[in-house]
Length: 405
Image (tube, rainbow, N blue to C red; front, side, top):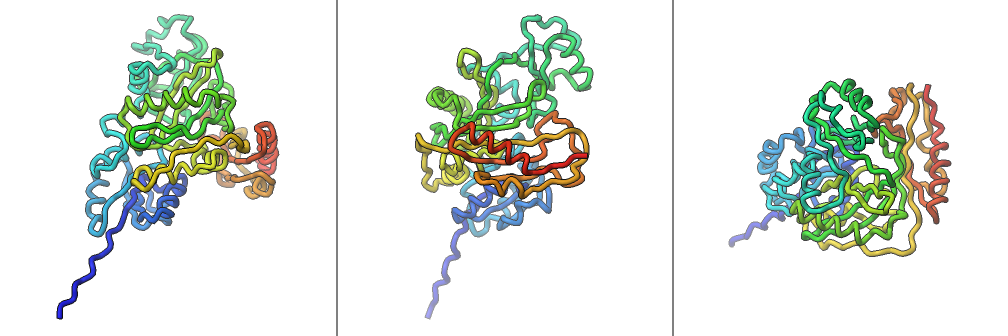
């Protein structure tokens, strides 16, 4: 008598590029969908590893090494999705691996066009997307040749994030001083015409090359030159630009050849109400927008739906909602010193608080706010109106009882 050996069930894998703290919400959503998660991170103690089924300890920059290690793991299954909640190199690695495993995402050759701001600007202009124009800079010694009418000018790294080394120059002397303080090659920076106006962040999903706008949030920043993100508010007072923003997102998706991916865009709305696209990135974005604000404001799980899109698991487009509460994500900054004490549970005890986190450990040095890494804590609240939510966020911040000495 012969017995037929039962065929082992194939495992459906999901690859998380990065396994840090911010990656955990993405890993959890993949697990909820029944996917086995392979986490990749250089840090052997990355907190996201504790939520993964398998882990690969490797720098996310070594995409060719990661590819070979993934092939060694696929003896009992196949990869259905590869995603990241990070930025920069993580996007390039994700696009490289997605291409290798025939998973719809972003062509690898296009990925550098999101990392390099100078190339990004050229793509925007090539496709008639309104964006602050770049000011040519041949060398640091020729800065005096820039027309006085070009000022004020935003100076930013050509490749960078978190507002690190971003500044505002109102004249030649300030621009010269910036480069004196930053002893780096001139071509590592770009000069961009400063647009006065309100800033907004828009979040959406590209599914089968079609862009779906999910949410628009108003962004409040510190006064220039630092541009630190201090608050994100929904609903936006620019909700009337929804269709216009969605059309721009569609143009971005088509110009980069995006098939399936989240897409974050940052705009400045000038005094005439025109949206100028500052940056676009095929990622979820930070600021606790995808995992806290959007689910609370739009009643839409953008992490889950993006995973469904990437893994062909019944993606559900966002639906318009007319009646929704206001949601505010607010950050706390401090003056230079040492974080002596705080009450991390204080804000959570306030009605309407949906999330809070202290971003620095007790005893950590606190800097005067220069970039986003200098923020000390964050809280998210919800209320019937924007004004009420902002007032509630102020109260929640005070409940941290933070002491810096």
